[in-house]
Amino acid sequence: MKIFKSKHKLKKEISNIKNISFVPTMGGLHKGHISLIKKSQSFGAKTLVSIFVNPKQFNEKKDFLNYPRNLKKDLKILKYLNTDLVYIPHLKDIFSFKVKNKIFLDKFSKKLCGRSREGHFKGVLNIVNRFLELIKPRYIFLGIKDFQQSYLINKHILKTKIKTKVINCKTIREKNGVACSTRNNNLNLHQYKIASNVIKYLKNKKRMIKKNLYNFRLADIKKDLIKLGVSKIDYIEVYNLKTLKKPKHTREKFRIFIAFYLNKTRLIDNI
Image 1 (cartoon, helix red, strand yellow):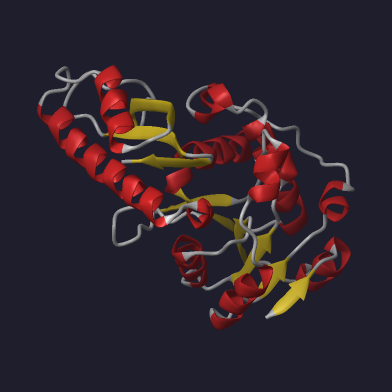
Image 2 (tube, rainbow, N blue to C red):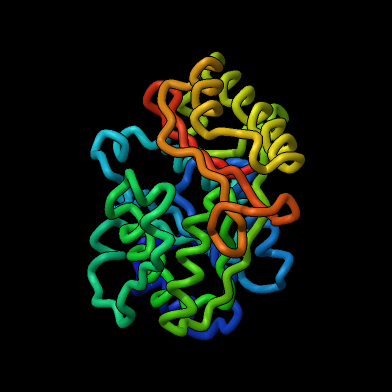
């Protein structure tokens, strides 16, 4: 495993590698990240993992500072997985060059997380675009727990004609149903139990919606979640996965999208 902190040294190393699979992370590696890396390795390319907590995608400085970090543990995991290349840039290293591609923000960026996190997706696409211009990977592996993020990255890649293919990977969950997330490290046992109950409730609610699309009210779901112990609900929406609009028929494929708070920890998921 080779570790790089300089983009110049990284570029020199990968200049003759034509087939790179890229897994971008903000560290705090968990089973979801491990699944992405293993999926990447199954493609037979050199796997490059980045670790960078991007300040430009955080709306509050306090949230950025409180984001769980454990680089020593991360590197131990990456070494165990026989990761080929690891890029751990400093802020100046990754933001010190002028990009060729202008950021394309699809209109979907204004929904869900985009409503309450102004500038968040612009920050995400900014850093991903920089990584793509620097690394020029054949594939980028993204988890669909962050469905909106993955969708917007793919739209940016298609619009700007970047020669990288997005590989969407399934959400990896803990035994209690909670989606693996670095932010889970900020939960205590009681909050973790509440998160599990939220997922169980939403799965049951989805089964009910499939039977009768019109026999539910989002306002009632919000009230039920507050009773379960949720501190605050940022949003809860039901969208058709293809049209990104509210479903009109039970035969449509849809998901329940949610962002909620347990004390000060914000969690997102789609069921």
